Image (cartoon, rainbow, N blue to C red):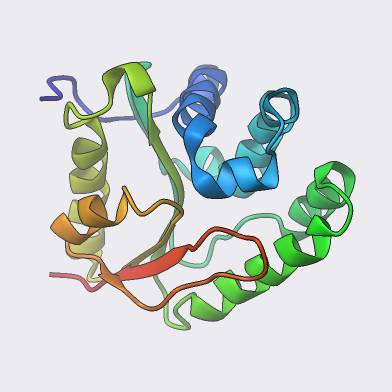
Amino acid sequence: MATQDVNIATHSEIDQCVATIVLAFSSDPAARWLYADPHAFFENFPRFVRVFGGKAFEHGSAHQIGGSAAALWYPPGAQPDEAALVALIENTAKGAAKDTVFAVLEEMGRFHPSEPHWYLPLIGTDPARQGKGYGSALLRHALAICDQEKMPAYLEATSARSVPLYQRHGFEGLGTIQIGTSPPITPMLRKPR
């Protein structure tokens, strides 16, 4: 069980948080579909994490537990830098897969709630520490904020293995995103309690 406290990640902890998330996603179906080659994954996925979730550091909504786990949350109204994300995928995704990646991202956008909400683009635990409650501790911490603010929380589960974790914390599936050769992604919403 996780025994360390959840803290807001400081500017000096950005690299550690990104590295932790990259390790956590090294066997994630969606991440490895995007960057199947190991070299391409370790070269490009850190940049993806920074573009897709990096603004959480600016908003003070990047949470971490030591070097063991990290969650990058966007508060209501905040979102990833779409132009930077498009440019990154244009420059790093392979050939025909680009169109499918953009179609998946477009579909993800359709599932986002229209009302104000907290968004969790990325959460991960160092694989050497998975199964010890770090992910649950990060979720409990942020969901307490959501509940206090009476705000829903939204995420996309990129692996079937993570869906039960999110369900235990009150998230419900909204459908499935699966286009072409992409793995299934489950958009999930949790109403405030």
